[in-house]
Image (cartoon, rainbow, N blue to C red; front, top):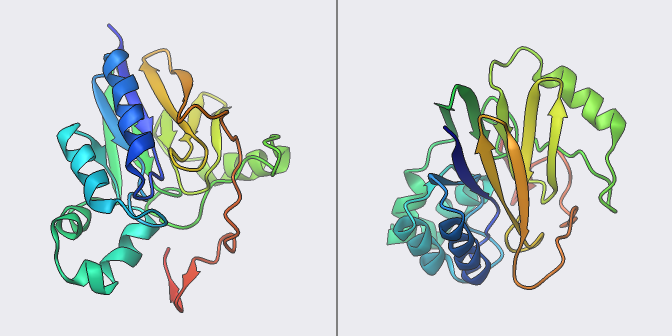
Amino acid sequence: MTTRIGLISDVHACAAPLREALSIFRQERVAMVLCAGDIAGYGTELAETVELLVQGGCTAIMGNHEVWYLDSPAGRAKNSAAVYLAGLPRVWESVREGIRVYAVHASPPQSLNKGIRLLDEKGGLLAAEKERWTALLDGYSFDVLIVGHTHQVFAERFGSRLVINPGSTKFNHTCMVLTLPDMDVRIFPLSGREPVKSWNWGMMTGRGLRAGKKIT
């Protein structure tokens, strides 16, 4: 048997590309949809975005923008979106078709900000970064690692391990379908746009600073 998983990340309160991705996943008959965090931030349609995720039965994990939103006046007001975001776990892990899958927003075991950057600004693979992350991920037991955060689109083999970032539905215009157990990955463009493999949003890499607060 095979299992297909729809992958999205960094939807950033923008409903239209998320709605399109969910439509693609229905057409592809995925068994589940996984969102790798950063549901909030940048966009203005957080309530609608959360409603789409809930209606779509999506599994989601927390990102750094969820932490920032929950610490804002809107988040502290305990609206329905805030209640949903506050209940998200930092990681998701499962065994599907004998394959161990682990998802975290930035990097394992539970970082929301130490992102895995494998591509340069033009989308080319950074061999030194792949080598560095190969060493950092050594010892983990998962077969597939799913991350977001860096607004990069990749599915790279680290030996027998596969590391996937489906990219941002808003900024990279992408979603993915992962098929198990063969660990095949397909990229789908969104919004009628050419996929952007690497979208640099100008944040300070690795520092995780916003309003004087550090998120790990």
